[in-house]
Length: 96
Image 1: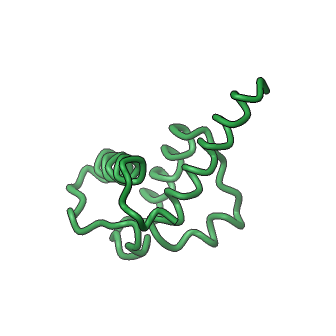
Image 2: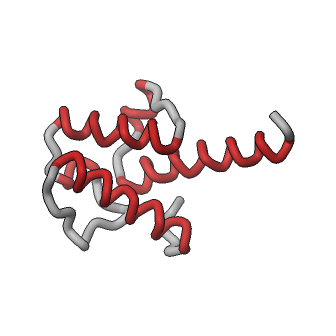
């Protein structure tokens, strides 16, 4: 989980805030933390799909229907993006 504040997790959280702000055209509360429930963000469902789509594009990850159902918190979403990025880095290091 990304609950331990690290430079990488802070960077992901800042990028998530930026994506939400860009999609919703609203300021994102500074109180947004990894443990924040996605439903507590006050994002309409269509805007949430736009946020997820932008996350998929930026991190080159595809959220399956099962993953979407399992994503409850900001941390869940960021962890999935971080895992995908880590898998790509590992594959590149192995020459895949």
